[in-house]
Image (tube, rainbow, N blue to C red):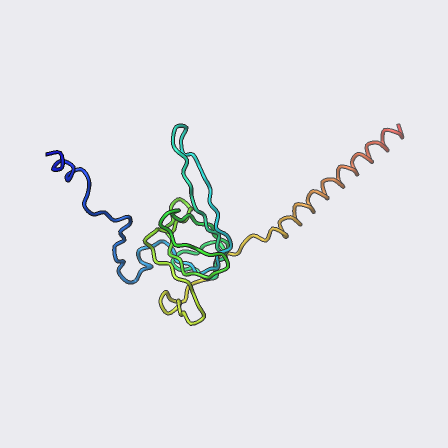
Length: 170
């Protein structure tokens, strides 16, 4: 008698993750596609609310060589599911499909990810593509800040020198 209710409570079959077959062309189902080399894979633990449990997130940094559908930065960081995402390895080049939301990119666990090899012709599959956005050269930006800072310093010293000279001549 007790066994009959238990068959309704506990499922007889379950799947951990079920992804539907994606119709071709795959890129039509995503906001962007990139080809790039993985620079870094990081895990970050965050607590979303005061009483909420901590949640671990996986972030992948990629040096982007080509981009399709949407031009992205030359170095892109996207989030991937900790449990189900592709096992990205550093210094390997991949074709990755991404979803964009409010400027952040996410690799869906069901999106196809493929390791590129010299024999792979991903341009035949995706088309010509475009170069990523140019990265800001931090050396040039630093040079500009140092130059401006030096100019302000010299102007201040000059004004103090003129003011002091004027004071002593009176």
